[in-house]
Length: 455
Image 1 (cartoon, rainbow, N blue to C red):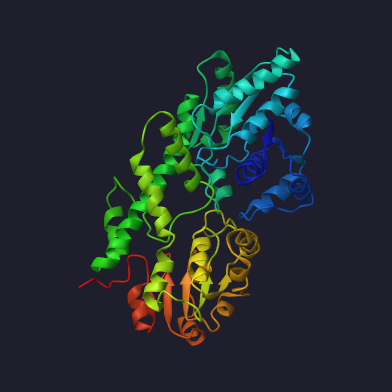
Image 2 (image 1 turned 90 degrees about the horizontal axis):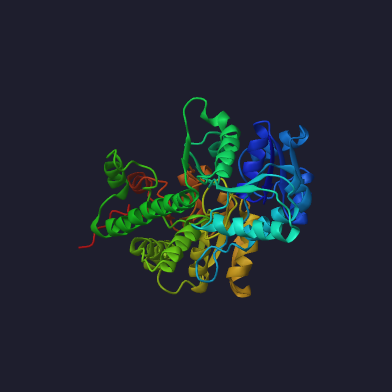
């Protein structure tokens, strides 16, 4: 099947590469000439495990093309996936300018029936705006070409996006209950047939419900994280091990274990943006989502938790103190620094006069780019980018762990003690067991695992 993907970010590039892997003829459009040139030269603009190999294999096979040619893209695929960014606007709502620009580009050039599929995460009602934008372009050209608009939100986790696409737990598709909608359903059913051979994974619904489902899913996951973070902060006060609580609570089949890990706050391109956008949608309809307002507030506060623990231990004035930071990306297996907790921690420490040495397995270059936006020249001068985890430890008063990379899970604790000025670890992802740290002679501060009850 001929398919066009508009946008080559995380969603578009993974979707295009994986659909090509299934044997489809995929044309990926992006207006960023540098990105397209990079992709055509064999490079990858993002770090995503397994993606580079899939892209290379399908480019070589002639099933995957990258271009800036809008007209060629509109002509290529009967299925036109819109997978562009929907960044938050100033009021927290999703900015649809790129989605609607993609829709107008399709309408400006299409000559025959197309199914326009919203793959981007978009608010309820976006399909109607896409439909109107395309129809306006068709009217200007006085053409009778017909089209359908469907919603097919993505459920890809950064760091595992290729695996998630190729082995989906569900495929959500929204189509209209019209003749054209049925035509779209048939095409999408054929496209996703390879994923439904063992069991049916597709959930069919109306377009608005599909748009809403993505926001609801991310809002629920964000809620679970913030809920556990609040409990973890209380656990630190009353001498409770939040990991034991997690196991006890998660054993209830009505709850389960996923997304119940306490930590130093969630980040990335999805949860913060989608929670805000859903709240904005509610306000548009004169509704208040009080739980989600609290979820967002808890997460904003949680990103300061490591800095607060450092201040409690070393004092409010950190001039002359030096800290090692392990992990910068918002999660492991990605170089994505959007809304990363490390950005807040670094601002907290550097604003109090501390110096830091930082290390991340893949996000160092991206971190240097985004920190230029966050920090003052003086603060930037107090950051050293280390060559290895061990190098970051040199002359540090303590180690602070922000991202749960596998490489950090089983370190040489004796070496850590030798390199640090003091054997102190602040663990923002609860990688280590408090009793093992105690036995190793390490002063340990986890999230809900410090086990120091207030008198």
